[in-house]
Length: 191
Length: 93
Image 1 (cartoon, rainbow over the protein chains, first blue to last red):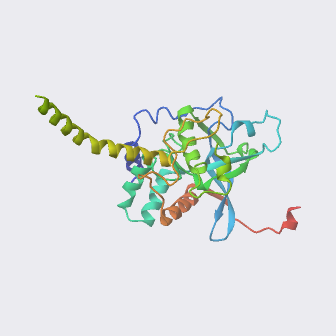
Image 2: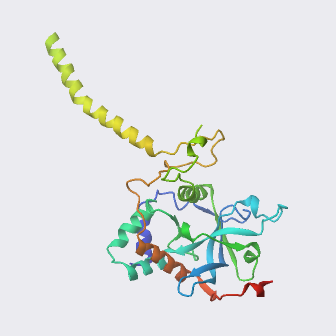
Image 3: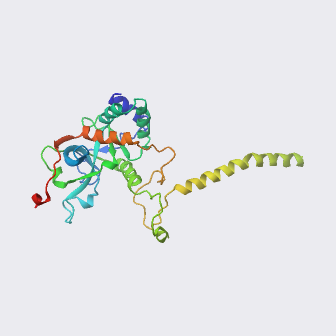
C-alpha cells in the first residue's frame, strides 16, 4: 500500500476540519507548547547490541513550557521529554513486511478512529511528513535542550490548541488512566 | 371504552418495560468504567471520551508483532548517527 492510500484510509475517519485545525507555523510559540523539530539527536535502544544508538529524529516536544524555557531561571530545565514521530509511509512499509497485508486496512482505520492504544496520529506536514505520522507513546525518550540548538536541526511548526488537545488526550489516556488492580491504601484516597 | 384503554395501557407498559431495564443496565455498566476525579481542582484538560481502565469494546490493542513493527519503524524513521557502545563508568568522570 502506498503512503497516500494509507493516509486516505485514516483520513476517512477524521472530521473534515481535523487537518486544517491541527498546526500553526509556531514561529512565536515557545518551546514546550507542542513544538515539532526535525533532526534532533536522542537515544534509541537497540535490542541487537543491547546498547543505545544515537539517532537524529523528527520529534514532538512533550515537556511543559514552564520546565524548559530558557528565560525561566529554574534548576533541572535542561533535559526535556520528546516523542519520536514515525512517518506513516515507514510504518506502512514495515507493517507489510511483517504481517499479512489484509490486516493493514483495519489497523489504519482504527488508528484514524483513535482506537489504537498508545498511538496518536498526526496529520501531514508538507515536505516533512507528507502522509502524516504517528506518536508511539511507549517510545517517549529524552534529549538535552542544547540538542535543539545544534546546527542541522530544524524547527518545523507547532500544534494549535486543537492539536494539543488531541495529543494530550492520548497522553492522559496512556499515562494517567486508573490501574486495573486496586492498590494498597486506595480506599484512603477516595473522599 | 375503559376496558379498551386499560388494555392499551398494559400493552404499552409491557412493550416499554424491557427497554427501560436494558437502558438502566447499560448506564450502570458505563458508570463502572468512567473515571471520576475526586479532586476539587478545576480540570485542566478537556477529556473527550471517558477514560477507561481496560479499554473500550472498540479498543485496538497492539499485538506483540505490531509492537515489534513499531520498534523497527522507529529505526527506519531515524538517521543513525552513532552506534551504541558500552563505556566504563570510570571514563565518564
